Every structure is written in C-alpha cells, then in structure tokens.
Length: 68
Image 1 (cartoon, rainbow, N blue to C red):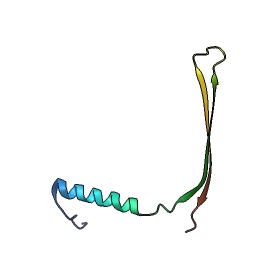
Image 2 (cartoon, one colour):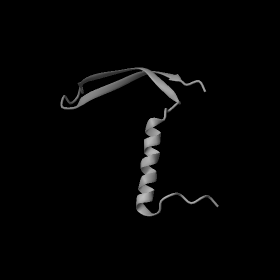
Image 3 (cartoon, rainbow, N blue to C red):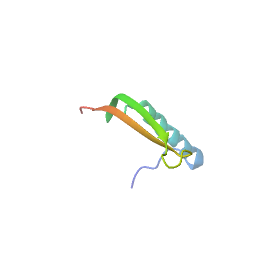
Image 4 (cartoon, rainbow, N blue to C red):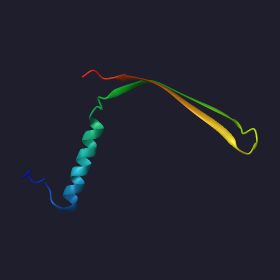
C-alpha cells in the first residue's frame, strides 16, 4: 500500500498541484530543442467567389534531438 500523501482535504490537494506545476516549469524538457522556425502565409481570393479568401500557412522548423 502506498504511503499517504501529505496534507489532507482540498488545500492539501491544491498545494500538491501547485508543487507539481512549479517543478515542471523549473525542469528542462530534455526532449528536443527548436533551433529555427519560419512561418509564411499566402492568401488570395477564391476564383469563383471573391468574398472567400484562400489562405495557406507554412511552418518550417529545425529541431535538434537531445543526446541522453
């Protein structure tokens, strides 16, 4: 049987959640690192109905995997 968690009730639960989130924010993800990102947007009116706009968004990324 696992050890009981410290703190009882709602405030104990809330304190644990704040602790989990603060630890996650401080820790490094370690999975990958984004080195470069480029976004381009192209748009033009639809040939049959000029009230409709066709939009294309392209995202180019360079990602380096961490070596563990």
